[in-house]
Length: 265
Picture 1 (cartoon, rainbow, N blue to C red):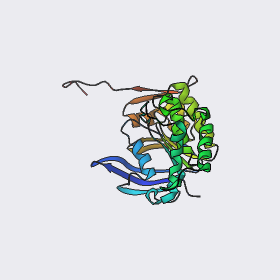
Picture 2 (cartoon, rainbow, N blue to C red):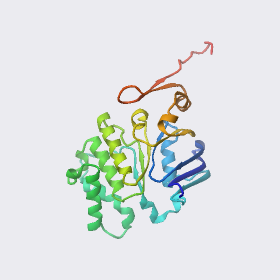
Picture 3 (cartoon, one colour):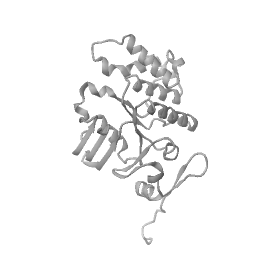
Picture 4 (cartoon, rainbow, N blue to C red):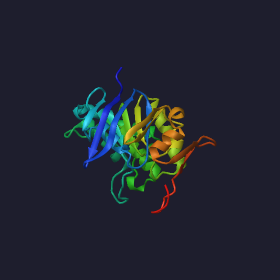
């Protein structure tokens, strides 16, 4: 069986500058993979390559065995939760209306949402635990509730592959852990998940594999195998330590002292 996502020696340049360098990575069906790395490492660009929104300068990318920009209606099998979206609190859009947007990829431009579409939207809301908020204005939701609504929008399309970009940004730690537990339950329903995050310590308890990226793939494998001090130092360009004691693992980054002009190296 071919991987759900497969990148082979992928290079990407934006504005004449390299963003990704020689990335080779495979995600098998049913896996939960986290992509971690510092700001500017190319993590969001990697998701955009998988979505087919950015084409590699070199190399090849396949999703369900096909180049993503050639998937056509098959793109509906991909759910996407972007980084936290700004919502005008006065915008008159209900939660159920936002979730129904996830059905538009399979509806096309002419059809209006029908009974099956509304049922799928309601089921997605129930799955993420906010079914009781369906008729609330989206602008009235908390940050955690809003992210669940955007996740429900992606799930309404009944995707086989779910991509998430920093889904817990601006969400308190307790809500973040609850969100990750929800993603594990979604994975158990047969959905393959690829998630970009900065929550290295917490997320290591939930994912199957971690891909550490800093323009190139530093290391890829099971969290306990790849989240080493050496890999973190290579990613973050400084000494980094990963602590496992306590309930929630965490990382400490020790930056090098900045030397003034004239000082020794």
